[in-house]
Length: 452
Image (tube, rainbow, N blue to C red; front, top):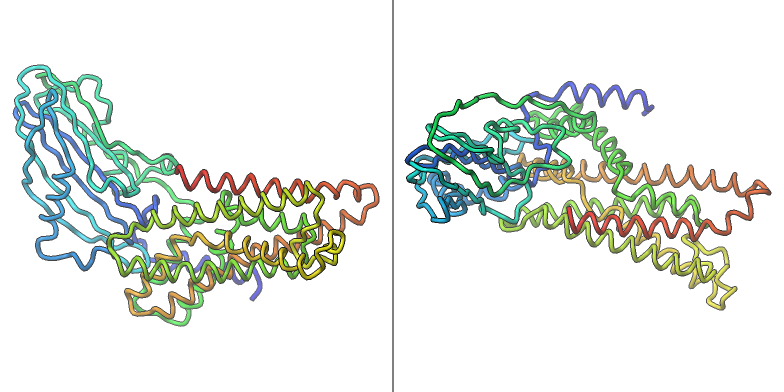
């Protein structure tokens, strides 16, 4: 199918997705917190909203019972501490409610609302501290707001209104650095202030984000027609290709490295195929693990895989840089017989090169895309496991296509430049430069996975 036809079909898919599907810009693994604090002369009230994205909602389905809202709000209450001038105030649960708004890929989300209160004597100036330790290890948006009713807040460190419309619309300009407010200290004194109800504006969306929502929306369609199936497969290929090209993943840099060495077209295909296989198997295994255990934090597993991927890229870069600096012709591809120069033989060089290729492919596909994982889980929930597996495979093929095309283009460019006489000598340093580049990328990937 020609590229214009693919773009037309992808556009139709975007337009065909229902607008009611609710996306989580921070990720489908997140558990997000909003605590609205109101300080009165005789008490401190909190409206605590907990927003569970699609995957934690799916994991906790077996625990849902008629009393789920009350029991979970008790957990929220236990995780909150209200202190007045250092003294802990006993907090009581006034009401609890839960709803399950539709999310991506036919999966539900969870919105838990807990109304809490703690008695306090604030007839004089005091300091009110609120601390949130509910599910401390889970990634997500953490927000607090504070107002006074018959109480003046002196230079409050948190706003009076929610920037996320109480976890309904996250502002685009904060997505790269989401709020993480888990404690607040309020200096208060008796008096009157006005309470503002201004809501935050709803943010826009990027083209990739729109296409991703279209992709997951197609999977969630109750009536799976042939047209919807074809559009979903095309979008899986498109999004997989886009995922491979995104900055920060290091996949395209690895392809460039292959071109910089003695890589061949076959080498580029080998890396692409390994990426596809690794990514597909990884998504399937993680999907099974998440479905089987509600205690498994998906974002923690992805973080661990990110560390492994970064360490693997770093190790490959370090090994190849060492080889280049010692003038050992360790070929990334088949070796071309260079191994004889050091007595290792052609077969040994071939084995080292092929292992490096496979290692790079594994590193490139080891961290699965969350959107591909959500699609798989959504398809399983709708009884279409085969369709979810097909789309995950398409996602991996899209990633492999980007890597392979970039590798082939750079191999051709390298060969053309190498044929120019005045540039030929400069290519002797290229293996060391590209190996150093892979080493730097690996260190960057590892650091990002460790500290993000």
